[in-house]
Image (cartoon, helix red, strand yellow):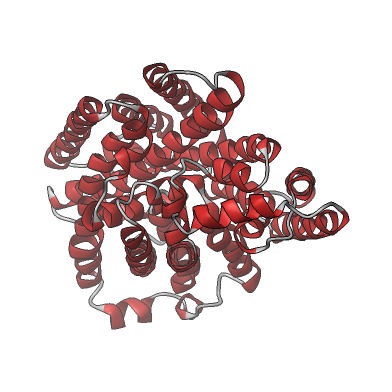
Length: 473
């Protein structure tokens, strides 16, 4: 399964454009605000494209096609919960987050509580964002490898290296420029080319549905435990993910943040159906794949005309690169802003802070590529990431925004206890199971409520200042 020279040329041209846009972002990133949140100047078009692109990465593309191959239409649940989580984020939090004018989830927790909450949440957030980056690099290997007759490891190194270069150069401006192109590629590749051609090659939807196993046409085939797991991991996780929040911070107004986020979430739901159907198409044409993670690439390379498959593969790679770059930048933002500047160099000037942010982006990018080579499974890595995020951070963030009685001590105790419980539960039940995330959430709620009621309530002046900040005053 090797792509034609024309497909390879299309992909090569796309990669060259990404690097050029990375350099353009470098020229525009004159200060740390430009580098980390694109100067908070994105309008509806670029904002929706960027938020959609960062959400729809390896899980949405390679992962959903793989689930569609194995479980049929019920494979939509993973990305559907991602889309619904983004819709909920826009409706519930979009305006508040835009008004805060911050850089990270951890910074928000310090504004509401104290510095201890910031450092603990920063550590957990970095684990999450780095593991999401790892999933994208793994998925790049599953697409570039078959396409170019490389090993998965070679695909990971090349794909991850390209992301590292353009993210290192221009930060969020590079990511925003490349995401806009990537959004166009992935939309055209999946909705306008791959899905209609695949359905036509299968003889139409009626024929496709007649050829797959009957269980593949049910929404519950994947299992209610898995559907619940995806809800806990992705719906809750998307509400509080640093990579998602950081895109919200780029919006030029609270209206753009709210409405644009809802539109991006609805787009993600449509993407869930499209990529799952592609996995079902792969099943009817290639029923004996040893690795279902290659289903998307097999359809693109072997069922589409030369040149068209190159566009589709560039679109799928673009989806991975956009999420990888966004989560990589999120990791470096948390470490540079919430750890280095906050606790080690509070008086650092902006040019020095910009250099530190770039350096951390480079180091973390190399770490992501190395870890990806050892993990190997895209869904497993994503489960690990979201287990820690949802299990340990979700409850404190919701308490900060919606429960005035929550205290700083309770928040710290909640995050520490739930992280330990989730980690131990993963050792017992394994990653990708419901108990670790459920136990983490139960522990988080129990500890936060109990300790909050046992400790003095937050000072009225602190709550008043917090409310004014949320309202944009």
